[in-house]
Length: 209
Image 1: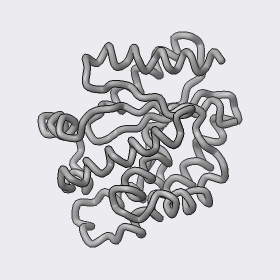
Image 2: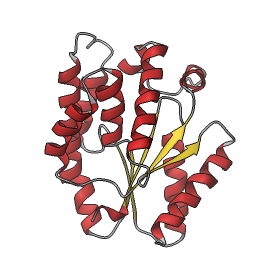
Image 3: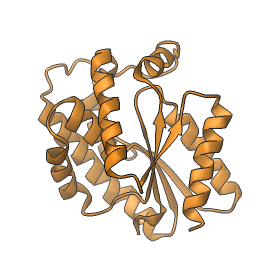
């Protein structure tokens, strides 16, 4: 059932959200039934949890609380939106999933990847994506992109230091080593059409297996 579940990952400013919608359009043009969604969020309850997590006034939020809130939002989103779509034969494209928690909370926050993986196992019950696209851009470059984009929402993660985002990047590097079959790396530091083409080639290869 997880075979049609494709996730997009990357640091801040990697361009995932824009690319997700372009990939969805290309899949639909080929006749695939596609659901696009995001984490944390995607449904009402999870969007409310997202607002709590990312509220810029919640600076006192403890790191394990943060990890548990992400897992809670993930559980509700999975049960209410992702699993029903997969059961109906749709391809699900999701902007972030468990790898974000492992990189951000597990590694960058220093809780431990295995600890964060454990609480997420409780949340997802073995439902892992079949393919994950990691959009690779150095944190400095990604943050520069965000700074120049006036339309983007500002959230609590934007208040973090560059060293935090570098730790996130290191965390993703470790995940890519741990799950080479599932996680495919896309160079996000190139023209958008080239990024989309590289991502598309990976998706076509995956769904035609």
